[in-house]
Image (tube, rainbow, N blue to C red):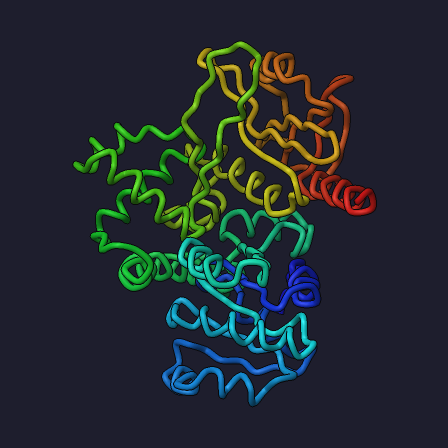
Length: 397
């Protein structure tokens, strides 16, 4: 079992709130993590996709009252959405009896539905934590392991597969199952083949600003439908919509968001990229590494941080801008090159934003200055910098 870094955060959330919602795509490891947390304290685990466990909830109040001192783990709770109102009553009654925290751990695959349902019923009673695929800091730091993570992505079954064929077969089955079985559960009826074509087109345009009109024309659908499909994939935590960084620099800025397939392994499966050598020779290689870096950095953002990209109509661009409390503004260029050099537009963009620090993330392991203002740095080292700022921010509160 790979120990997930977020485990301590979930445990801390349970020590602070009556309920914690652990959100993430299917097969990302939510159940494994929940069972590891449940092993640390008296618990009852219920899988709401199991008819046997679901039947136990025919009288949920009676069931919960039978286990007053246990953590109740509810897996796939979107299968029983009416349960949220019951949870509120149980939590409030527990509070009157003196139990304030650690009552429910809720697992769900779709963030939109869970957020809507739980926020209406459990406001002030629940903490939300997102579990993504494996991060670069959760595995070996050898180049072979990191390259495997980039190629296969961070879904545990894909990353730990015996070989590349087994890995991509798992990912292709995952995509097919999501489109044919899971998507109809989470949103309005969407033709699976059309949504797969849409998802594949996003993969071909990894890291590019959204051009809804072009996508609509290629698929023969309306721009409104493009927006609906994109919202669905974003809400299912499969696609990231990176917003433009707005500033008063007096420039004409690109206002369309950049779109990324969040997991690099799913990106490569959509494009039928099986081996690392094939990835290196594919036009998406640079954008794949860019999305991989961005996803890992955003996973480790401390509380109160903000993110975006900066791009003007003339092509001046910063791949990722991070505002990190208390007063840090980072400009980050991403290059899949062991001898990284920033584009000229990056320097012009830094003149516009005046960041406190500038970095160029590359796949090497050493950190070294490229100029007085710019440092070449590895992804794990930059994540460590984020963690350090997070500790400082927590101490200053």
